[in-house]
Picture 1 (cartoon, helix red, strand yellow):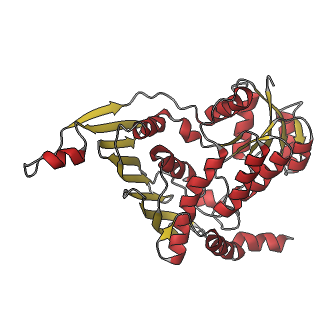
Picture 2: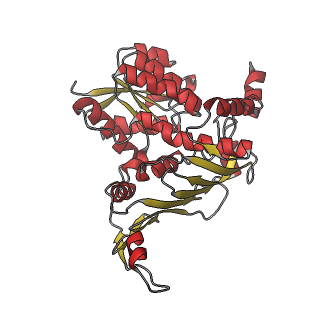
Picture 3: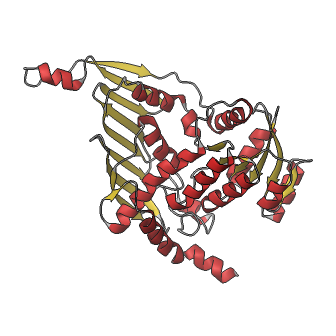
Amino acid sequence: MKQVRFGIVGMGNMGSNHAATLASGKIKGAALTAVCEANESRRQSIRGQYPGLAVFATSRELFESGLIDAVLIATPHFGHPADAIAAFEHDLHVLIEKPAGVSVSRVRPMNEAAARSGKVFGIMYNQRMNPLYAKVRDLVTSGELGAIRRTNWIITNWYRPQAYYDSGSWRATWAGEGGGVLLNQCPHQLDLWQWTIGMIPARVRAFCHFGKYRNIEVEDEVTAYVEYANGATGVFVTTTGEAPGTNRYEVIGERGKLVAENGKLTFWRLREPEPEFNARNTVPFASPEAWRIDFDHFGPSPEHAGIMQNFTDAILNGTPLVAPGEEGILGLSISNAMHLSTWLDRWVELPLDEREFEAQLQARIDRSAYRAEETASR
């Protein structure tokens, strides 16, 4: 194969952006050859915008067309696993938008289908391409920071006004999206949280507030405390109702502290590991010598185009994926645990009880205003 022929399922905001990137020729070795869109008027618009592009009404028509080698799935959250499984069954490589799905139990069959297919499977975790977070991961995985002791992420700059939620009846509903800020805005941070330190929590105690700032069904503010198997702890705070917001990520280890904020990374490196200093020190109020290192010239992040190029290179040349699709389940397991901890008002251990989570989620889907709207329209 000299060129990967891409198809896209879902030509909404994200799908349209991905189509423009592929059609522009920015992705070497890739070409946009077909798309699928359920809305008839939108299909007509796409044909006018991209003359010669094959446009289908259903994903099945797209998968059976023989016009594509890989598919980018940009449908609503609930549809990602089913569309991906169908694509694998048609011998196609698959790249899905985030999140992987709405629950671990619904995503697991997709991962299993990917393994059976032997095809390349990626997820659009474009923030893994950001050189700032890549450097955080490098400093942690290389051992430069030492054993992790604490993490803290305040990510409150996902501001969304009521008008945003009112723009679609499916938005911020259990039946339409399966969650709020944790499923829509924060999948990137939840993924980076576990990706940069190489650990997911052993247990979670979360406090989600539903419709606190906006007239919505789902969570718009979350504060969670987590504990890791090695004894480290972490805090994750997010909301869509705060302005101005903050995006500050701290990782503290035995050899210092990393702080990522405002596009910059600062590393306070201890001259010696804190446990070693503490063992030899005899001076009250003494503290280890620390050196400040500023990383502030990372340059632009390739974002979505970077993921698409990496995915294409994986198909053509066997290049390792930066964001394997199977890893979408990791960040999702954390958000599932945060929801379940709130619903049950107690600690939740990971791996979480998937049946219990699914039962709790389904009960909310059944009561969702969007579910009622869909039923009434039939």
